[in-house]
Image (tube, rainbow, N blue to C red; front, side, top):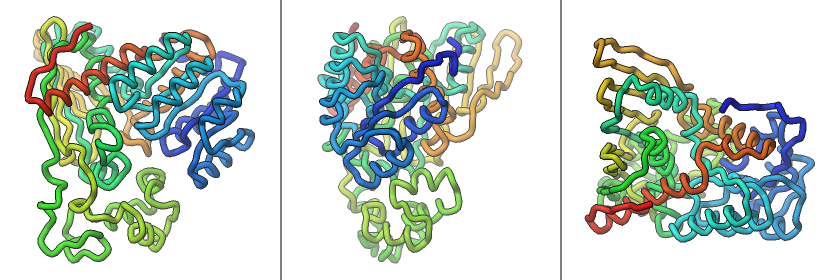
Length: 422
C-alpha cells in the first residue's frame, strides 16, 4: 500500500509512555507531520519529562503511566517506549482501554508476556504495531520487490550479517541499558529481533527449525589488559584501547547526528568538559572489561523455513558500525545487499545489475535509514483510516519473530535443535 499521508483531515491524538530516545523520536516525528498531536505523556525522569513538555507544550504530563491510563485521556493511540522489561503491563492496560498501540521492540522479555499482549489487543480489537523498523525502509521495500519479481527464482538460502559495531556494542550492550540479560532481554531480542523479523519478511515463509551458538567471549574481566584500571579516565591503557570512552564520546562533538545519539544518552552537555564530567561520574566511562554486562557479544542462528529454505544469521560486536549485509541465493539469481545498494546477478544472462534502494544512516540518530519515519507514517495511516493493513507486521507475525529468538536462546543454552510449530 502507498502511504496516504495527509489524506485525512482528522489529526491523530497520541499518548506517549516513555519519553526517552526512541519514544521521543517517534512522537516528535508524528507531531512534525501535522497529522498528529501528543495530548499527554508519562515519563518518570525529570529531564526527559521536561524535554517532552517542551516538544509538546499542549500535552498533559504524568510521572507514572498508570495514572495516565487511569485518567482515561481522550486519544486514539499510545506510543509505548519504556525499557524492555516494562512493556507488557502498559501494553495490556492501554489495550484494555481501547487505544491502538505502537510498541517498541522487543514486545516483552518473556514469551508468556508477549503472548499476553497479543491476546489483549485481540480481545480489545485494537491495532498493534511493533517497531520492526527494518520492514519499512526504502531498502527493504526494494529488496522485497526484487524477490517478489521472480528474477531470483525460488529462494534456497539467505546469509545475513548484523554488524553491531565495536563502539556501538560497547555503548549499548556493555556499558549501557541493554547490557544485562538478567535485568532485560537477550541480545537477540534487544538488538536482533529486527533481523529475525526481516528475514521472515523477505523469505515469506514461517520458520520451522532453529539452532544457535554464541556467547560473551571478549568483554570479560579476564580479558582486561595488564595495567588497565576500571575507568577510562584513569587508565594508562586508554589511549590504545579500541573501546576508549573519551575517544568515542568526545568524537561525537560537532556531529549533529552523533550528538543526538549516542551522546544524548551519556550527557546533555556539548562541551569537552561536560563529556569528561559525565564519563567520570556515570556508567559510560567504565572499562568494558569491568562492567556488569552478561549479554552475548557474538551469536549465530541457523534457520530452516517451511518448504526447506534455510538462512544463517550472524550478530557480532566486532565490526565497523554499518548497515546490515545480506546475500540471497535463488535458483535463477543471486542478490547481494549492503543496506543501500542491492546487486542482482541473473544466472540466465550472466548480467549483474546494481539497484540503489536505501538511505545512508543505519542508526537511531539518522532514523534507521528511513525506517523510523515510514513506520510512523504507516501507523498514522492505520489509525486515521481504521485499516490495519498499513501495518506491515500484525501481532501474530511480530510474535513469530520473537518466538524464533526464544527458540534460538533455548538452542544456545541446551545445544539442541528447536522445532517450531504453528
